Structure formats: C-alpha cells, structure tokens
Length: 199
Image (tube, rainbow, N blue to C red; front, side, top):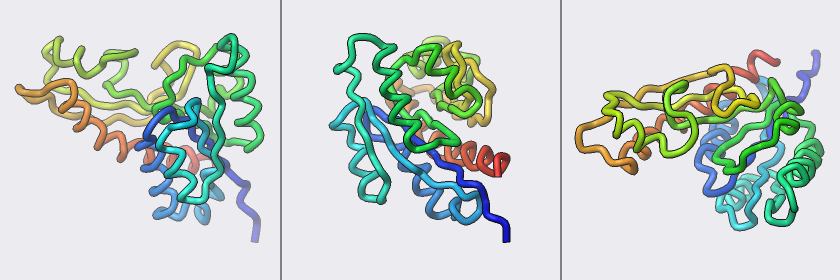
C-alpha cells in the first residue's frame, strides 16, 4: 500500500485562537491524518500569553513563540518566523487571527500555500473594522471569506465564503459574534478541501 505524503499544517495565532481550535477539532474528528496524511504540526504565536497556545498544548501540538517586539524590523521578525515555520516542513501555513502585517518577502516564500480568513464578504471591506463599516454602509448582508494570501492585503483567490444577515439592531460586536460562528464552519472546510486537492 502506497504511503500518503505527509501534509503538515502550521497555524499562526496572536490570541485566543478560536479558528485554530475549530481546525484542530475538525482534523481530529474528520480523521485528516488517515484521509490526507495531514496533521497540525505546530501552532506559533507572536505573543507568549496567547491563550490559543494552551489549547494547542492540551491537544499535543507543538507550540512556539516568536515575539515581534524582540526584533528591530518587520523583516528581521519575518525571517525568524519563517525559520521556525520551516522547521515543521509545512504544506500549509494557516493564519488564524495572526495580527501582524507580513512583508512581501515572507508572503512570496509561502505563496500558494498560505491562507487567511477575513471577516467580510471580500472584495468588500478589506482591512480593519469590517463589521462597523458594513453597518455604517447599510449592508443587508455581511459575512466571511477564506482566501489565499498574496502581497495585496485581503486580495488572494477566494476559497470559501459564508453570508450572514445584518439585523436592524446589530452592533459591530453582535454582528462579529454571528460571523464568527460561520468562520468556525468554513475555515476547517476550506483547509480540508486544500488537503484533499493536495493528497
């Protein structure tokens, strides 16, 4: 019987890592290791106190911290981050609430194998404050997009989207909470599709 080539996933977080946790749970429950030779090889954060690191350790996943404050420039930080990521030989690099703008050189290094999730229906509302902007514009619908990462912010190929209604009494927080439930569904789904395609 032929061996499935390993597909290592490295997830980058900065905080609680709820999308990371959703992907880890989907991998465990969906048997990604058996189906695709895929495993979550590491969870890496730019913050040592990121709560998501605790979840990762509890699930037997290797963790690492690369503190951006310890580096004089974005380039130096990205170089060290890449060194740590490459130690896990990733097939996919998954950004899950990783709150750092990455340099073009870093993006180029992982082009085609780095994905991100953005809380809007791209191409609408790239960047920050997406929920408040959707409300301010009077949008009837908002949502979330999983996309490949390119040098242009929130602009790569769309891999999955989900639509959420904007209710008349919505605040940015209430809309964000409703969008987040969809994030936890579509991000694991998009990652699994990439693994299936790369099998």
